[in-house]
Length: 262
Image (cartoon, rainbow, N blue to C red; front, side):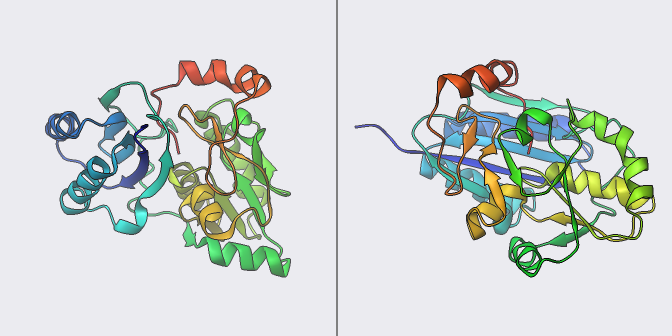
């Protein structure tokens, strides 16, 4: 009988004084719990993607809540049939999501958080708001919010190039930035805020939380994810793998199997 597993992801921007010590603690914990995945640690915070048994995931969540200050509502989970990752990596980096501007600190100042329920209500009402997709082009090709503004990024670093133009262009408009799980749109909104954009929001919990709460309302296609599933549907279930999907995204995924991005 096949054992059912759980995928867990979360992030938090907060000052980490000693990344090396934290890395050692997390490596030991993950080995003890027999987890697989990727954990990125940087002075600006932590970014986590893991898979394991339900008991192991619950054990890690308890540790993260008690020792890392991760709120229960920050955890994103999905039931899966096989491990999301092929090995366990705990790495120290300059940034947990690379924008190339380390001085941008979302823990100090970032865009206003907009709940999935509020965004759906805004879109239901036809409110004049710009939806800004901060993901890469291969992700947006799989699916996005209807009418969202696409930047056709090859990587998140390129967002820094577009940001000054966007801040000037949309200075008098309401803008909602979004990404897969919230980490990129949080950093993007922090940069836009610093550049003078006043009415900048970030979708709390990203697309994953939105789909969990609202289904496919105002969303077209599927959501690209950075693990073996490649994409999930409106019910957070893995999309049936096809030759076209593997051909279009599989090669990229093999290169980034252990890259963590949300």
